[in-house]
Amino acid sequence: MQISTYQASDRNQVIALILYLQNYDNRVDLSLEEQPDMADITGHYLETEGGFWVARADNGDVVGTIGLLKPNADYGVLKKFFVLPEYRGHEKHVSADLFQQLLTSARAKGLRALVLDTPENCHRAHHFYRKNSFVELTREQVPVQYDYPDRDSLFFELTL
Image (cartoon, rainbow, N blue to C red):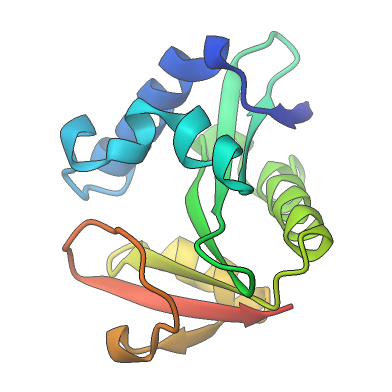
């Protein structure tokens, strides 16, 4: 397994993975059109001082993703954190490796905190965030504005 920065050649695999996990694994029912960042990952993440990483299986297939938006000098927004079910868990540590890559980058950029939104029904994700010291916020407490699908979501913040 390898973590690397997103390349334009990853586009189709990344979109397929994210849409599959959002809509079949998590049952969130989001379309590609509702997520303009996915149409231009390079422009939304890489060209705005953020970042976007992919996890690859030994055969080269994309099995996980994580993105970092940088809306201002203090806050980062964790986005598009997805890992295929067969690559989750302590044995594979794909989620942990992707998350560590994001943390390393956020700290190097001098960010003081990360925020995120996640669907209310994604209990496994909530557990991961809480286990990694994120604190739940109300929508009104989110300290930075960013686009997210208008769904029943939980919001979290991590002080770096």
